[in-house]
Image 1 (cartoon, rainbow, N blue to C red):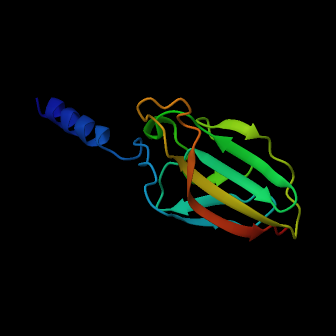
Image 2: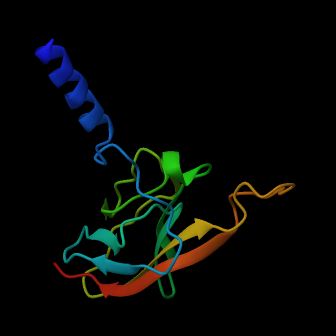
Length: 139
């Protein structure tokens, strides 16, 4: 009987563990950080789910873009994200191109403005930027 009680307690404890819970949707401005290197990793704080991540450069336009559609609680993009490695929840919009050492880029992340709005014909396509930063690629 003690073993059963222990196992039930353990099961309840594990089921409440946040390791498996997706982060909430970003509801405010976040701070975006970028690691050094030719394949940087992007993070943002607080850690929350977005549905669009775009990296672009002046004169070139988007060099990588991923997005998700639907409920961010189930399929949002969460940090960290390595350049060119789209998370399983993401759909590739612009394939990654090689980043150039010394070139300045900008990353912006966004959430849907209209996702799930009643009568919305273009739901999931409007975006609200919640974080952005510029970075220069180093070797």
